[in-house]
Length: 250
Image (cartoon, rainbow, N blue to C red; front, top):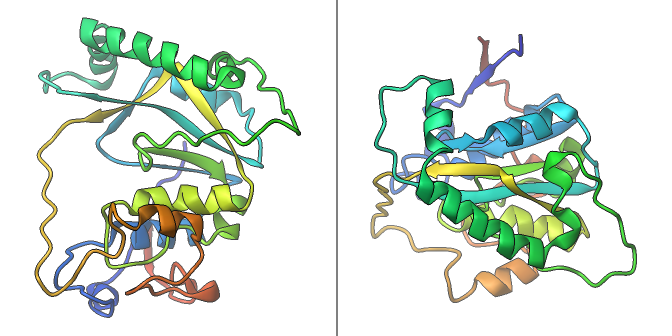
């Protein structure tokens, strides 16, 4: 069995951060805590409201990952109406829905034209490395829902910037990876991660302002290691490496 390590960061740590009263949870700082304490060669960052297709799991099981690459699975969204199904039944129901199949066929046509080298990777095909090809645009959809990279790469770029904001911060780890020359491979259908549509609550009190906005995201992404307002965890202190947080194995 795979051990599940649960790390608990006490409220006092949250309360020490800028604008902590406006944000009940700093999602990406919490993820940095996990990144710093991970032990495997690779890290898959995903969310609890995502469902992976069987083919995505089979891709992971083959263990044919490159340590110089970040992998992204095709992102999809779906309105779930079946709530009483077990895991296997839910997967069978979800990937048998005509709308899901139609959307994924459209995504495959689009992504295979944009990233032709990656089309066969999901089902075991090799992705050739062409040293002198021009840089490809990154795939940004659902940027925080499936991020698979070596632990060495995540440590090298210091994870996410630890700012008083959750929205748009998902993109910034990709900005950092791209800045240091990491290659991205887009796992195309049938390798899919499906976001379960749900009500979103993102209230921010007037005591804070957005650090990264639509107006400055391109500038921030172009210089992803420049310090940002409200940012903590500078240098090697990101992820609170010196803190002995409570840990439970289940």
